[in-house]
Amino acid sequence: MTASSPCSNPITTVAPERRLIVLEGMPGAGKTTTANALAADGHRVVGEYIDDSDTTIAVSAHPDISDDDAHQLNWLRKAAQSTALLVRNPFVYVDRDWLSALSYAYSSAVADGGALLAERAAWAEHHLAVGTLLLPGTYAVYDIDPAASLTRRAGRLRPGHPWNRLNALERLRDFYRDPSRALHPVSAALAAALSQPSRLDISGRDDRRDVLACLSCLADLV
Image (spheres, rainbow, N blue to C red):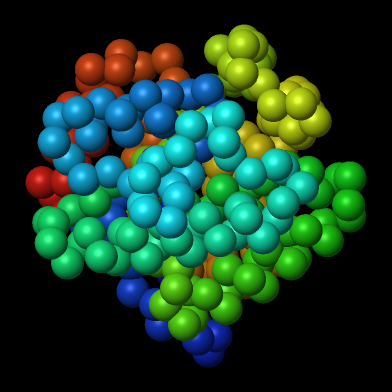
């Protein structure tokens, strides 16, 4: 993700929060495992889904895939928690952010003609502009091939979820290769904003100790 020239859309005036590091990417690639390890080492970490008390909730308690409002509220709640934590901490890690809302919509766009993607892009534009979503300083993007993603998650696949299918996972992987490119046809403003954070590419097959050390050191550069 490289820097881009500014344009007139208001979200391009949003500066990345350099002390915010977000773990994003393919399911089953090791994001939550890393997040848990970072927390165990004493780093401040915001979990994938949190409740009203900012406590990370179990995967089994995540909203149903059809409950769009609950999912979007989670990203807003996490942004608020991250903002509060950044007041008291030099850096904060986040297990997924609002980019996941767009990646999901992109991965399932064949089924609905891109309607959900357009809706969520407009939502993200608005909340970035008013400051209720944050643009991180760094995205650590986890990659793994779709077949391995399915194998690793075999015991915890959620019924009816698009990410149970190889074709949707292929689209998801394409999105994460370059979110700015994927979103440009839908929102040039979001594409420009997402060109600002730095990017760290992580393979889901990398040694987990090396990944943890890399992410821990990354905070020293923020």
